[in-house]
Image (tube, rainbow, N blue to C red; front, top):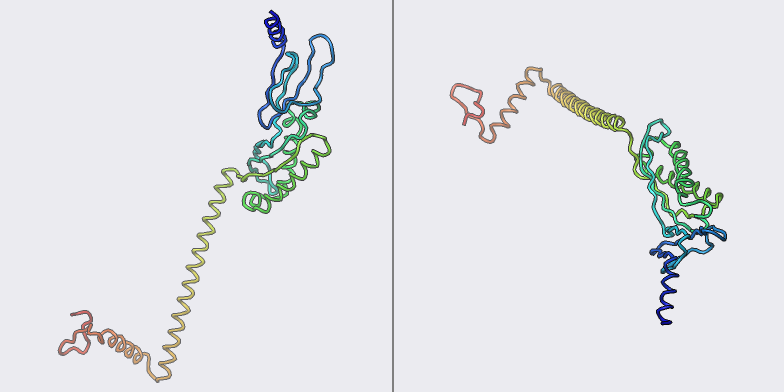
Amino acid sequence: MKQYFAAAVVATMLSGCGMVAPDAGQEAVLVQKPYFFGHGGVVDEPITTGRSFIALSTQEIYVDVKPVQWDIPFNDLMTKDGVPIHFDAAAVVQVTDSVKLIERFGTNWFANNLETVIRNKVRQAVRKHGMNEVAIDTVAIDAVDAEVASGVRDYLKASGLPVRLVRFTVGKANPPDSIKTQRVATAREEQRQKTEDMSQKAEVARKAAEQARAEADNAYRQQMSLSPEQFVKLQEISMIEKVCVNGGCTFVNGNAMPIIGGR
């Protein structure tokens, strides 16, 4: 009879209780809300591991205390040269005091306190660089990351927000489609100009070679005291000799000029 009575008492007690069970990397912050008597408020110590029973009037708030990444998109963010770009940034933060966080900053602490600061810091940093720097130059991206991270850490220290910034990174910046089209057109025009320049240089080189050869031939003609007609005849004989030396000519009786390629 006593065993049944004890079990009934335990069951009655448990029926007026709730249970909290934080997962790994979580803490449960308790907020007491008594129905009738007593003072409510945030409990000083969080529940870290295992299962715990709490009063039904007590609210539990689970807080991640492991590093968590928050993705922040940016659209039409102006660069130094007035080009709107869009990209995604990522802030990895870790809560250092879950009780203080809920008690002073509430559950929407990131959106209400930290996200706006990060957005302002990013805008200020990006405006110091041109579109090509932010989109291509890794040095500029690293400078933006460092500037934003430093500014956010200063804010966390000054505001007392119990959060640690683990890492901040800016993703690849993308200009508008119109800018992309212009860049492709510019690249094509630059390539066309390079091709034309190379072609002109080749023509100039060929002309110079022909002029040099003509000057050499004329110098040879003058040295040999040949008239232009004699020099042309000599060149003709030289050409016939080169062709016919390998048997590529056919001589016909009565004709001093061979038939080239007649075999």
